[in-house]
Length: 434
Image (tube, rainbow, N blue to C red):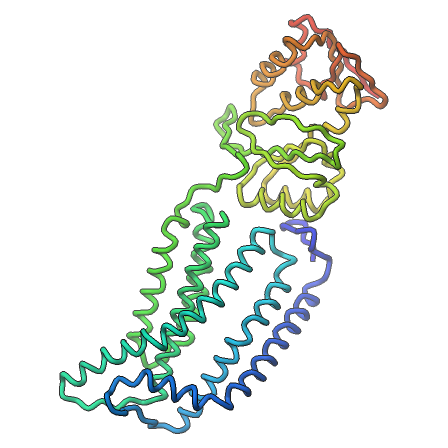
């Protein structure tokens, strides 16, 4: 579905909301069916699994775990079987989630999602084994010593022990999931202090909602403790990521204009299938190269990803003409607050036959915003000082059929002060138009 006031990628389509909801419902239904089938399979051996788990959790030298409520125990059995079904269905669920989300994600977000899902699968398995085999047996044994010191005889409800164990294991997995999101987002340069509030709201919100959902109602102390520890651990792990400065990449630097405004300008060196020459960008500009942005949708998505992650305010294309880009793509750049202009090097390189790139260099030198007119004038003077050029043609666009000689050059739409500067250099400045 396309929204003109939103960010849209090449994979976006014009499907209505109901189409996406139908696709989501189909994928969720297939996951639920698989979980139900796997739950039934696990239910055949759940008694042996729970018996083995309870033997590990039993803190007494002799057996002190009993079943006080048969109906609650039956519910615990099915809950355990369904959790095992959910865990074993996770790989299929991850594939369905990625397939559904992929069209709406930027390349870096896709990589981050895949890394997070794979990492969480491995960490969940490891943490489940650690929790059941080491942590919970130690925790129950430690708690049992208080009863022995008080002269009490411990009798523990098997269903309640498993409920608490499931809650703690699930809490550990949730905390690990939230910590992984912070770490991966920070390493992918998706998270920094400028959007930390957005990330905090969603990470803490989803984690605590799921945490409170699984904690038993009769354990308010556990609810408070896990909430405090979970939020604290996420903040500790994300200390640097939540306070990181604006991401830096591709050589982008903060440039100041004459009013003190900050700009980040990215030079997009697109060869347009080897029809556009490559020239050196101005100092402070970022640099990235592509083969053909205007024709390759994947390259367009990658460029949008760079603009969004590194907060580029302006794109300067080498050869691509802005009008050749899809309208939706230009709208996406505007949505991200990024202006776009072109040097039109593909056309500039075709107006002479001597392979001189002075016209292209002048086009780069004439860039303004954030640079001042004085900076433009000085750069052009330096280029023309020893070039042998004595005639400059100019206009709003390159005239059709223009063929320059060795002592001639072209500047597109120069400002008045530049024309005056060139005239003071004894260079003939002549307007041309179609």
